Amino acid sequence: MQGLIFNIQKYSIHDGPGIRTTVFLKGCPLSCIWCHNPESQSMQCELMHFSNHCIGCEECVKVCRVGALKSTGGIINRNTKLCTMCGSCSTICCTNAIELAGRIVSAMELLHDLEKDVIFYDSSKGGITISGGEPLAQCEFTLELLQLCKKKEIHTAVDTSGYGSTSCLEKISQYTDLFLYDIKLIDKERHEQHTGVSNEIILQNLRLLSSLCKRIWIRIPIIPGINDDEENIAATASLIRSINGIEQVNLLPFHNTASEKYARLNKDYRLKHLKIPDEEHINKTAALYREQSINVLIGG
Ligand code: SF4
Ligand code: SF4
Image (cartoon, rainbow, N blue to C red; front, side, top):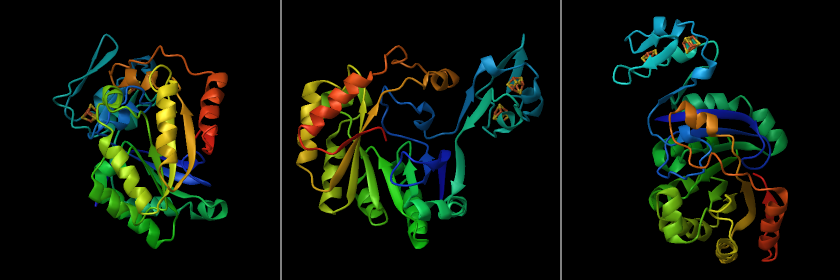
């Protein structure tokens, strides 16, 4: 089974316990306005171009077999109708002015790569984490990768928005040791407004994992002016308290590092001027959860 990924992060210490390798799958049914990985959203490969890095060597133009690239006055333009996403221009570009986001890999090929770091997983009680994008959006690939890892006795975590088919979640839960589960907003309309989808299936799937006695860590992004009001915090805390199996809650403060990626993809970043929340605000938010006897950590 093949899947589309956009990154593999080795030696990660923020995506579950211990030292982990995080595999980022490409493609997500949500479109959160604060998304810091805009290249994760599309289910297709994408070419990211950052003209400020370009030195005008035209090596990319020469290597493109279909003539999709033209240099006009030192500016590289791509004809998207001709481009086959072969990635040759990205490989040859010595300044990283062109980057191909997206790579098709088989689950077996990926396993061979993940296995190389078993010594680190074992010594730190770590493992692998499948993130995204949305792992549920590539259900069969996610399932096969998890099954292969479990055969090798590698600890598995899945980082999910929870937006996906319940039957898929049920299947993958059999091979998942820990779920990192995102809760963004409790009010259905506000959730839809800021992520593009309703949260009904997300909350339903969270309850399903709880009923299956799965280990769950909740992840909450803190986005100023969007989900950091006391009403949403109280509703989120109330939800968390009503669900068994939630071991901890990680608050993930908004950061503004994605601007360059949006520019590279020619996408509009609506939060580019949003200020990052200060320490006092984050601590106050954490305190509101702790008042409800919830085990809260700041950061992922
Ligand atoms: S290879 Fe890279 S640096 Fe050279 S012209 Fe193309 S984009 Fe610019
Ligand atoms: S990805 Fe391939 S086809 Fe597309 S512009 Fe680059 S070299 Fe040409």
